Figure 1 (tube, one colour):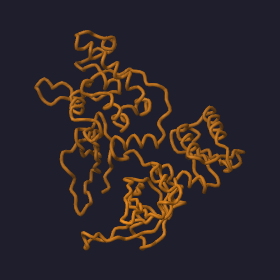
Figure 2 (cartoon, rainbow, N blue to C red):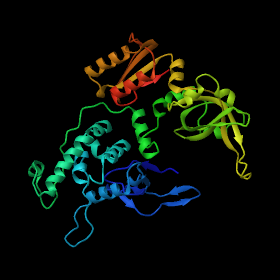
Figure 3 (cartoon, rainbow, N blue to C red):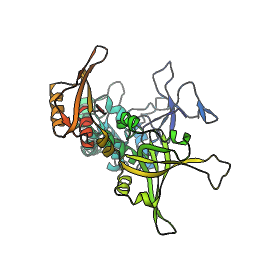
Figure 4 (cartoon, rainbow, N blue to C red):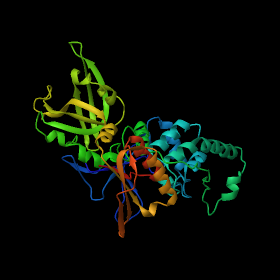
Length: 403
């Protein structure tokens, strides 16, 4: 429908999903209580609406916890008793000092961090989710101490340092976040889906986008347009895997293969399911590469409906293993503004930890100025998933391309 879905936000989300947009002539995000006009499945809204995840849609976050968050975010009413001006949370430590920790427990805060609800407030201070997650326990302890002092009428050191100016209530930032590497994209997306039921900030296949374009000849979207019995190769993640016994006593499997464009049902007949490694690959939870044939099936309960494209599986392997087998060389692309001698030394150490047959090319880029391609680095690696994840952790983004 062309609408961007935004992750939950401790300063923006309400209990339920809301429609938000930023007008061309204003910077403040405006919450809309109405739905944009929809005709024939297409959304028509010149302001470019976005859907903000509601706090109540986060798994493990109950209504009581959401209400406590909204109450803490709400400022004092004005002198005339009108609507209060909201007081945004400054960071995780400020959040834990202000919300009622009897109603917002540790598991709730863990879910908020893992789904990205603190991403916006922490971006300004360069704190990522792994740091926030490890800091939760100390933030809670600090928050309990501040709340105990407040309830006993004592003035803490934090209050003395901040005080109140011009009627503004003092906030409670200032806790210490540990120095940690960010979660790699696979770990972050796994935690995100575990709390939201969806991938919002990305997709597990994003890191393989270039490789999938070279190694696959179909997507979940294009499969529906292909002829019946057409042989295809498609990559994706396995969703809803289940097995069923047939009347003859054999075992079949059913699941959906999901990529960044959609999902298609896959049918695994008994003979392919018995092949070595197929069941293990499908149940691994890792991205897979599938080979099979397109099958257009008519809905038996609705003969007027158009036939649905499905895939009859013939082969399956872990995507990481398939790419490892097919890769002949790798290129590491780096922007000079984001590296230094220490990073380059760490890069060499990382590459030397995974010796193998594939030559490494290093490409250094100064956007808009120059680009240097170092084709003969003298390094040869095994393009394993462990290497790809290690490089992603080191640089905070995908820097490696497989050829």
